[in-house]
Image 1 (spheres, rainbow, N blue to C red):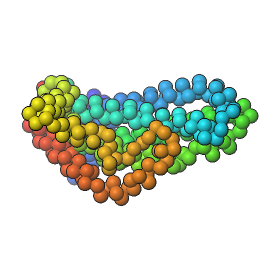
Image 2 (cartoon, rainbow, N blue to C red):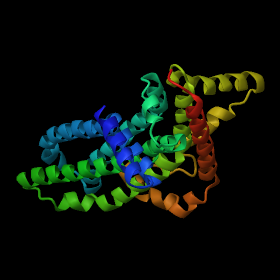
Image 3 (cartoon, rainbow, N blue to C red):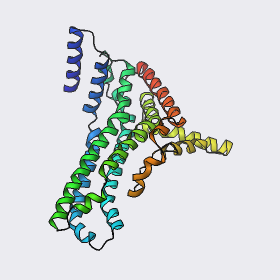
Image 4 (cartoon, rainbow, N blue to C red):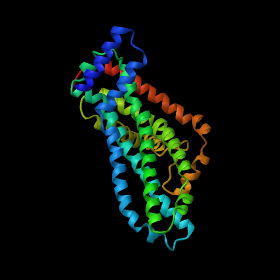
Length: 305
């Protein structure tokens, strides 16, 4: 309850001295999510730590592995762990985003903390938007930061090992285009994990606000039921096709390939301006807006479970 007391005291002090700033409730609502859901930053940090431990052990075999390889093979050996760790951290944060969205509005009704939060000068729309900002803004930026720190530590470890074995670090730095890799990673996180996947987050927040029990079940059963009815009645599969199109990033998506060479050139496949102008992006954002508005309306009338 220390978090609740801090937020309540801040609101009371602000209300006693002056009119509450419009951005202040949103700011404290986002901080509340970071305080209450520590898995937001703990899960990707743990994945990064485990990978670093395994990477450190694998470094004992790096000098012997590098000897006798041609430049292309050395490029693959050196770059593969950096691409793999980026994919692992992204996968972890995507899972965190799914379970966070399903728990965000359902959990506050289940533990009845919604009664306290509704007593504060925070609108239901502000509360829902603060929760939506976690998968759309906080987690992509956190993923990028943790990945950059992890890869930088990997470079330091690799450099020390190679210098100690007498191979030198020139080959390592010539094969790793970290700045380009980080730029592509940020582009992928913003375009795909934040914007392209936004309808999924909106749907799960809507289910979290509506479901009285088992939000994960309610998030998956209706699409499956529609798919079965569509398949039996019409013999088609448009819904799973649309979901697969969205999850697979679609033609508007930005592929983050596990093949190092392809990853470097994926930005040339779809420039940012083309992604911004793609109809699929704006249709998805419109659907997301509808889900979030509906979730705010449901939260306004829904009491503790």
